[in-house]
Image (cartoon, rainbow, N blue to C red):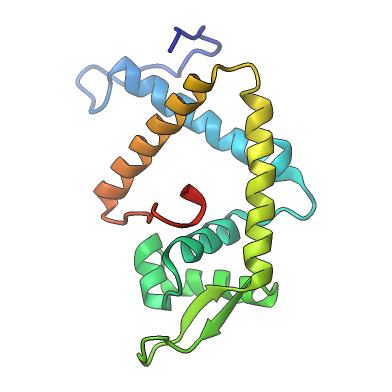
Length: 175
């Protein structure tokens, strides 16, 4: 991958001896902050009137990748308090994106799964995000796009390992 020009200076480095004070980490933290800002405010895919909110996208993507899950499984998978997850599931249910079903394996707990409308909304959202990412990377060589995706996956998997909350990648949107 070619050297990229520095467009923005990262914030000042922490004091000598501070944990994680390597210049590469400073740049990573700075770029990660900007990526999150751009994801929320910068790309047209995220400003569509019919765009799903972030929690609905993540919830639908997880259920699509893993299959029906209980409230407890979802809370553990996301590291969320059950009350927070309950609010998200209630909103998604009211919007017709998820439904509660009996456990297909005969268990007592109810499971949640995407509705057909929820799957369609997720696919529409991901298509809009792909189009936005394609616009941003239109002048990039294909190998640079693939390299960025591989590094982002490596970063995400490292976070998942530390949190002990792996994301299923064999099915769903990560195909």
